[in-house]
Length: 369
Image 1 (cartoon, rainbow, N blue to C red):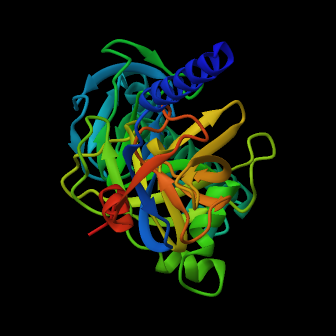
Image 2: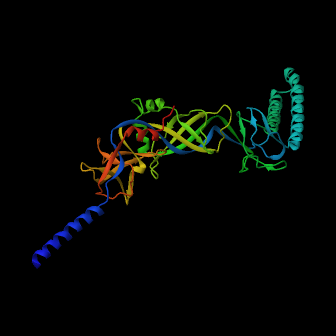
Image 3: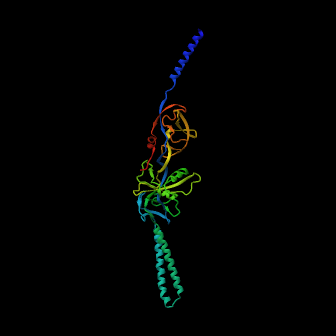
């Protein structure tokens, strides 16, 4: 009887424990997943850039002298040939007057000797000597006149006046280290930036054309994001890539040009260049659907038993984007978790709620109009 009672009690306890464990088992929670497909998209890769005009010319004095007049203001728009500065020329004017007098005296001497030579009263050696003296006097006078002309400093190009570090009365010469100012021709602005070898290959290999130059010529327009975060109103054009990568940084220097008829852009400015990169038949996943564990990037997929499994993937981060291009680790038809990433542990059973893949990727797509 006692054995029978113990057996019944044991069975009751076993059933009770089973029910308790059954009640304690966590429910299978629903989470959103997407089924991977390949897609074509246009991304905007972003690169910091510095801005320069077509020409940035340092204005320097060719002769020595004190600044007598300044005819322009900083930031003023000037035309080619417009007067910018005038150096003091009082001493040079006096030298010019003396040199002009010597020219006149030498001319008188030539005029006096000429008829004497014609009448064979004197030899022509004296006349030739007088002519040589006249030429020397004229040369001296002309050099002084040029010196006076150089004292009037004019703009060599159309452009914008830079800073004016020197003031009236400052002594300058051709050896003065600091220029009088800088004139920038900003009718077109060049944006200079750099990209690494991978980025350069991604852009050029996906561009139309056979040769490298054809690919550059057929590349779509690029955007310029100004330092205030606003987009410049006109598209630019990539014109050149450096012929070689920088051996220290592995980067290529790139130049894009932007029309600047309204002179909004100025030399020395900064911004960011956005370049459209066309990608065909690639797997894209949102960055927030991945985990970074040490040196690996992880995506959570849902297996045939609806259990979560961690899969390492190789990705390319797309500058300026919100997702990764997956080069290895995922296949078409794989279902990846896009909700609860970082919370759900591997091996957890879930109830997958399928979300349209295109609806996840499309908001992240940045298309140039």
